[in-house]
Image (cartoon, rainbow, N blue to C red; front, side, top):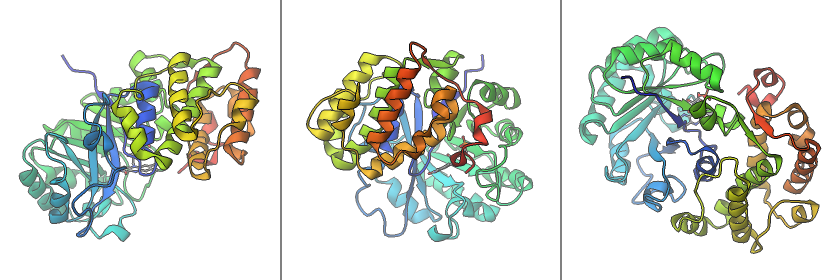
Length: 392
Ligand SMILES: Cc1cc2nc3c(=O)[nH]c(=O)nc-3n(C[C@H](O)[C@H](O)[C@H](O)COP(=O)(O)O)c2cc1C
């Protein structure tokens, strides 16, 4: 019996950082995630990994239910292995080499997709890393090539019969960047020509695209959701339950508030945030449940501002003091998320709000305007062309 492909969170540098991963766990509990890349050089990291890289593996062992694959970007064997030694296999059963980042020049010739330029070097490097790490431990995330899909068969051949733990194929070339459609038929080619579990990356936005992917690439063992999780963070529930998610307005507001609070808490008090996760006070699935989000918001407002409160009216909005950095992360999320919202929310001028107080005042008013209608989260492609943040 073929098993259902695993749906996981794609690595996105500056986006799927720890606060986002924790929030996604509360929103929809994806079973697996991959960290954004850590840039590994001959001198970095020395003896410890930065606190914000994979705290789930180092500080919070077992406290959160999802599995996490750490990812490094590095074009050389020796520094990669030195950094890998900081994550023993009991902590990190798999470590991923990023072979996809399109702008590696500042990171060295062979870093990111740069390594795909020379299939012989790629083959040697991957073989050596596989040998050093042991069978099943090295994961690769790669593009189809530098300029053309025709490079892909050579690159695949280079992987030969190596005992990789996972091969994730982002169905675009480096020249494509993040534009154009991902070529899922190439991912299927990989899944059919190797024994390794192959995962697809690119263009999963909701139920329709998920079904199309499974039709075109029936042999994949998993798929990563990248920008789709920004468009609809509840997408993991939608794909699991085969129907769009609807959430009551006030729960939606608390969930969005929790997002910016997590960003704020991790900027201000990372250790305290980790302690609360370790004690089980944060990190349970909240989904669309108001009282679960209520508990999270109370915990986080007390951590950030010393006063626990919920976001229910204009008075409570005045009590928040969100930094410009945390607010910019909320604006970024919103620029994608709006394409999955009902028209009244999507077309509102929230993305022009200058600070968190203005943003939440307006969001409260808009949600009140919806009356008893829940917010239906369902990605609508026709909005994409309109919102500038979605093209990149
Ligand atoms: C802002 C951003 C940052 C990214 N950072 C990483 C990264 O750190 N490591 C990686 O392997 N891929 C990275 N990617 C690529 C994604 O993991 C994914 O392969 C790509 O976005 C295609 O999937 P999508 O069409 O679902 O977004 C990044 C993509 C974006 C948009």
